[in-house]
Image (tube, rainbow, N blue to C red; front, side, top):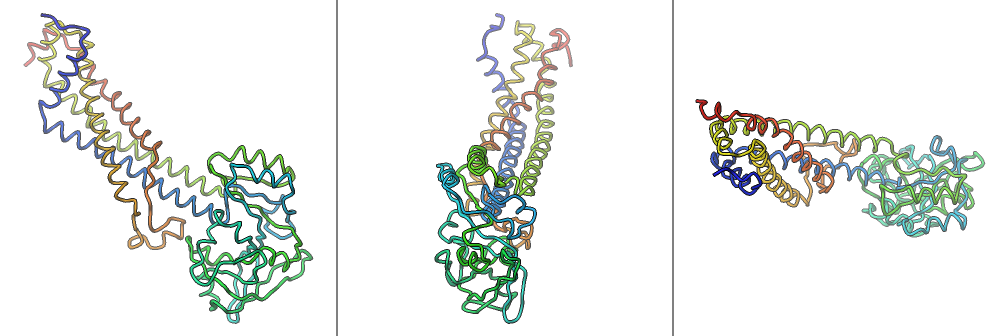
Length: 412
């Protein structure tokens, strides 16, 4: 009785039985494939988690998602490039529902001096309430207190800077910077708080005082040097940028991708590294798949010839080998994704590399990495394995379908 040419269930049944004809070989290749899928997804999650932490740290270190400056300030952050406080039109744009937080600041170069040492720093005059949800400083104060109002008379500095200056809580320091009249503006402050943060360079780079206090010290009246904005969708700032630029056409308004180009480059490098890793893993997997299917085809040459002699069309021979490959790939993807999900879930507390990677924070990498499960990365890895896996199976399937029945049956 000839085979029914329109019977896909028969092809699937034969493919499933043939896979487990050599169970040990099938299990080994299945394990190798699942391991490859697992490594692709887990390494992507670790890389993406590390990159997200770097981005979050940089954005919270006074960058925000969007910054507004007077033209020329980003090239030379001097006090002459100052801007007026937001007018009603700009405030309306900043009150849009896509904006989650915003604040105006005074940020200029300065020198801080204790009774023993001095250091160059960046003076940042802030509205303490406005910085919540916008920068790292409200949550970073670990000793003493945070600033209470824009006209607070205290000063907050980093722990490393305090050690360098040989000062501490309750001690007085002098802050000096150029005022709007190109004169030296200086003032004594009492240290009311110390902050700790990553990267550690920030602890030596910034000192914080009240915005109104900074304006008074530098004779700015109500002027500021920057406005920082946080939006709800970091990767889609275009609508907010358009609204802000329309409200303040004379200002330099740029997203974080322009302000921090090194981070964008790092993000692109991470994507390229993941693509290279995917290619390496898939190359190893494809050789294993092709080798396994070719072995199965050569072992069953007479069987395929007999099937064709009994009436099975060559396309069903082709389909049988492709279905075997499809079953292998689907099982590997299922097992690999489950193992990857379990691994990432077990690492939700973070991977502590501080014992073996001292100094990682110097290049912006946190010593504790929290993997980030990105659906796009998982889908990309699965699609790559599935599509290219089927493509790699075409050659063994073609070899199986091109046998001449008489020659295949009589082959020893």
